[in-house]
Image 1 (tube, rainbow, N blue to C red):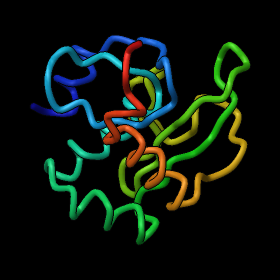
Image 2: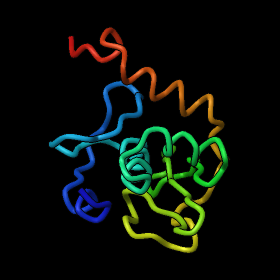
Image 3: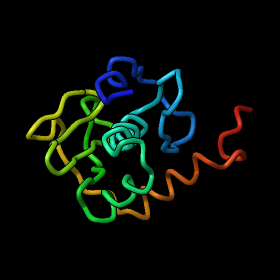
Image 4: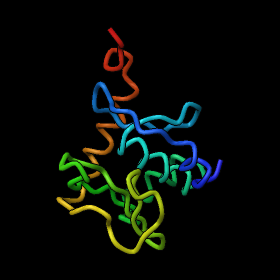
Length: 124
C-alpha cells in the first residue's frame, strides 16, 4: 500500500485510550497519532528499523500541535517531504496547525508500546 492509498482509505475514529498504532491492516481507522505513525511507516517502506532510525536521527519528528478544534493534535514532519496530518492529508511546506512542541522519542516509543499491551486495549 502506498501512502496515498492509505490516506484515501483512512477514517478518523476517536481512541478510547491514547495508544499509538501502525494501521497495517484494514480497517484503516484511528486518530491523528495513528495516522502520523502509519504514514511514517509507509514512507519508510514498511520497515520498523527505518521508522525508528528516522525518528532517532531527527529526519522525522512527531509534533504536538493545537488541532482545528483546539484539542491536542499530532502532526508528522519528515525531512524532504514536509508536514502532514489527518486534517490536512497532503504534504506541505508548513504545518497546518499551531505547533506546541516536538514529542521526545521516549514519549513516542512509550505510546507505541502501550498499543501492544493486551491489558491496555481491553474493550470492557
